Image (cartoon, rainbow, N blue to C red; front, side):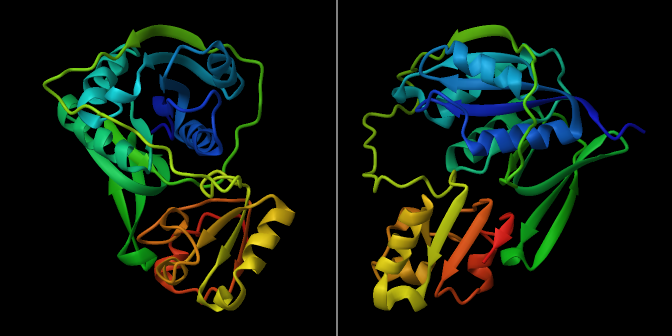
Length: 287
């Protein structure tokens, strides 16, 4: 049997950016590992030629743009539009890959019901066996793993970042369609969205280098900040550090926080408890 599927479709949210972050480059790389052709559904505030060109360089064959505004960035509004966009690719067996974020998980579950498929969250590895997509997920804080074979199509899979990159190539990504997602007053609407204040450092989920402080760094948290500034790194924290008020909740990494996959992870005063390390297992180098 073939070790690759014919197609895989990556769902990309660029509603607040003009370029693909490391999270979506990683997802495209994972899609290439299990499919002969990779396609994309791009959610954006406006149709961007630069995004299509970037997708082409990452080996994405075709794409559909969903133009949105902030009021429709909900699963109830996006799911019907995603189902319509999915039908444009003409392969009802092709899996959809989502990021492991709250909105993505909601959309994946909703779309699986709409399309008669299945949904899998927190996937750490994908492969193809006997023509079926198989997924590996973590369980019980990373102490166990589950092997899941999909037999209902399409599979809507939320994948964790693994720090993968796609070699750049000269390729054209064909735009199949561009659809405007209109708000529906009978569904949930986003009334207001307030951007959290930033400390000017890279986002901990996208940074190539992350410095993480734990309870042991509490006597002088400035060491974490100074090292991060020297390296141009993002700052993460354990739950203890967040509970003590040394770092913001948005920086928490682990089972009840974020999952990261930087090229370099540096810890200061971190004990290494399993509920934290489950969020850093995809890091390339851990210091």
